[in-house]
Image 1: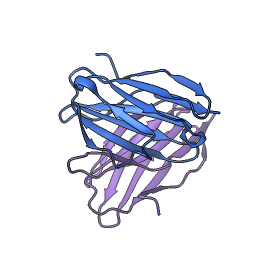
Image 2: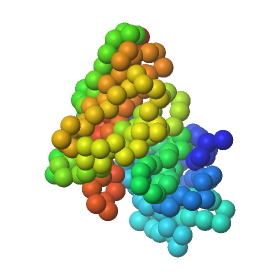
Image 3: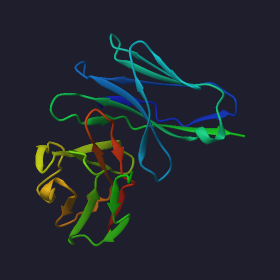
Image 4: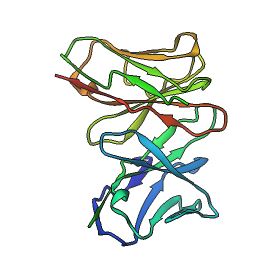
Length: 111
Length: 112
């Protein structure tokens, strides 16, 4: 079983739609949670950190449920430029600080 | 501020050859990480340097992979001899203090 599980998609949505991505993680000791965005043939870039209280950045809202080990990302009013792969990422913490990645969810926003 | 630089951006080598990938982190960042994405799979951790010391190399696939970070500045990842399954995109990331990761644009390695 993968440590971080995501629906690979693709999610094909029209411009202006609201789309939600979900992710689950298996290690209850995980300490930090993130959504990264990766454009085709580019490096991953941090989209936002995820907190239990929920956090919002413009059209993007992220939520963490520690009890269910579940992370979500909501994108409102989708733009063509939102088309990318969205990676759910967990950091275990401790001395190593390494990141554990999900396989990513592909979003294609259609005109 | 210059970002994380990786060289080369692409490399095509034959099975059995040696390839060396280089990563220049953001100046002053003590933490340097190598990750790899094999086609169809998730990005996976390879190893972590703190300055010149290996903090965690639990993700290194086997002893054909050798990473170094001389003087705590740039890092190299050597694959010798390369096998077909080593093909993928190798990402380097650096981190300083409480800041998040910054990834380089990656080296796309193809072993034929």
